[in-house]
Image (cartoon, rainbow, N blue to C red):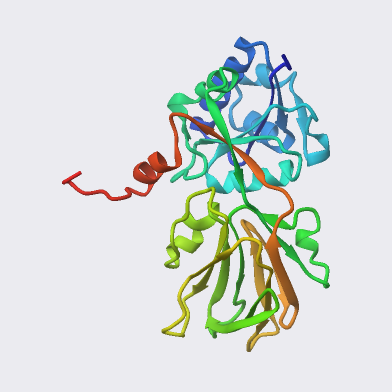
Length: 302
């Protein structure tokens, strides 16, 4: 049996994060596993909490980019909210390392494990009480290099184009597999995955999709077209966007990473050639999370 090797990542430490980190290190040690930790996360925890936890952190291997993550890593654990999990994929990329999130943030729709149950991350994983969900990702391709996305040009939740430095709308000419769809007059356009359907797209009126759905969603942001509604398309569709507007540039974001690019730049968006493996524990299904986090169907008659 391959020894358990766990990579740990977080962003902004807090008392609750430190508590969760200590618990998971104890759980890893209890099963004879090894841990490594992202370098900036380790440094920020040490500065935040000068306690005996530092003695546990000192001997751990560290990493600061994907190439430094141990090739035999069994599990990648993110401490924080959903935004932290989205940052975590920049270390995982196409390595196939399964990801799980411990929610020390707010909503935690992706990072579903509560701090009170943090040891289950290790004990249930070792016991095999989990499944692996293959989450679709979307990639951004452009003939004009975009430095901000040079290292990682894929997104788990969504790719968004939006206006910059103006209150005026932008026009997003949209083509699907080479055929013209429409030009959205709006603040922007979201191309969301099933995973991202519960994020920004949802807040703009998009539908919720189950994680295994083989589809993408086009959701306009504050459209000035009364007949512009979210559109669900097959995830093998190639989407081409060309933005125009009063200002010379617009914004493009891949999850939490953002860049300014010139209007008129042709953007090709399509399903990434690899998926993100997300750990789904038996006790935390997608439907349970819908009811718990989004109060799905909340009604006193239920």
